[in-house]
Image (cartoon, rainbow, N blue to C red; front, side):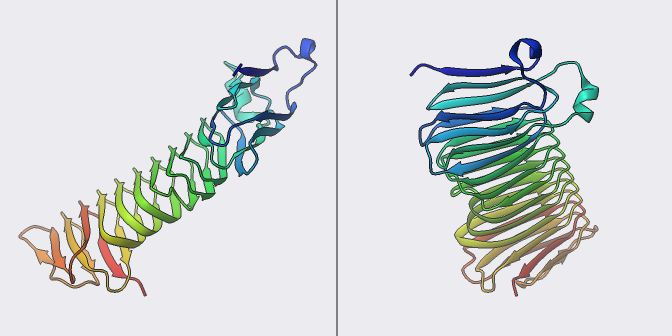
Length: 298
C-alpha cells in the first residue's frame, strides 16, 4: 500500500495560509489492528478507541508547533508534532496543542511526550505504551493484553489494566491504579504506589522512599513481592487467603493479621515467617527502615 503523508508546515505561514492555533480535522483509513504512534513535546492528547476502522485527529495545534505530520498507511500510522526549536520561553508560555485522536479499539498504540498530558480511553488491542516526562497520564477502560505507562514527575491514574500484564513506572509522580489483573509490576523512587488488583497472578512492587499501598485479590499460587528502602508497605489480602509470608526489615516494624511470631534479633531489625493454611499464595516483603503491615480485608 502506498504511504500517505500529510504535513502542515507552520513556519511557512505566508505560503500556506496557516497560523499557530490551526484547527485540525484529519481522517485516515486504518486496519482494525493497526499500529499507531504519536510523538509530541507538549500539549493535551486524548486517545479514544472506536469500533470504526478509522484514524481521526481533531483539535487545534499549539503555538510551539512547527510541523504536524501524519505518515504511513492503513497498517501503520505515525502522528508527529514537531516543535519550534530553540525557543524555550515559548514552550513555557505558549498556547498548547489540544487534540482528540480516535483509533480502532484493537489498535496497537504508542504515545511519547515530554510535558504533554495523555488521556487514554476504551483501548483493547495487543499492547498500549504511554510515556511522558512531566505530564500526567490517565487511562480508563484500557484493557490491552499488555499495558505499559511511564512518567518521571507526572501523576499516573489507571482504571483497569492489561488483560495479561500491566507495567507502571514513575520517579517522583504518584500512581493510583485500580481494577488491575494478571501480572502487575509497579515501581517508583519517591512517589506513592496505590494499587488494587483482582485475579492477580504475579506482582512486583518497588520503591525507595515512596509508600506502597496494595489491595490485592490473588489467584491460587500467586506470587507477590514488595521491596522498599524507607517507605512503608501496606498489603491488604482477602479473609482466608492461604498465605505463605516472609517479611524482613532492618529497622522498621512488622505487623500481620495472618498470625505468626515476629522475630527480633540483637539489632533493631524484625522478621516474620508464617504459613496460613496451604500457603499457596506467596508474599515476600523487604524493607530497610519502612514499616511493613499485612492486613485482612474487612
